[in-house]
Amino acid sequence: MEYKRGKAEEFFSKAGKKIDELFSEISSSNISEKLELKERLQELKRNKESLEKDFNEFTDDNKEVFKDIADSFEESFEDIKNIFRKKKNQNG
Image 1: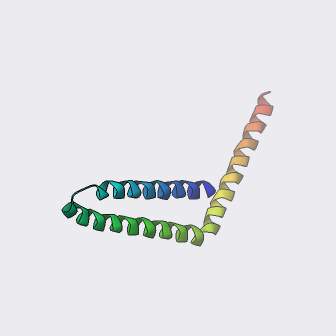
Image 2: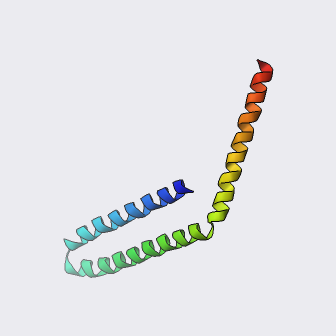
Image 3: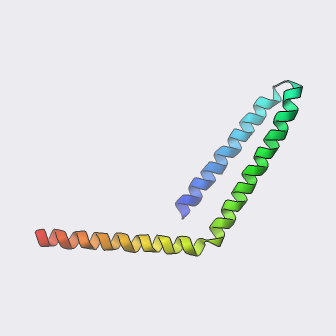
């Protein structure tokens, strides 16, 4: 769960940096291009913020599901380790 949140935070951080870099490039372009690009950039920022908000809400709403999946994975992993150890001990 924390891994997914970390990956998402990394994604949003990179997206923010790319938007900032694009904004810097737009600042040096001619005026007619600037107006359209600034509008598109604002839309991109809104979409990023909306996606980030939706992801955080989804994560919060599904914490218990993620916990259940993680617990199930851990149990399965332990079962596999135990089976492997038993087979190893049987075979010497």
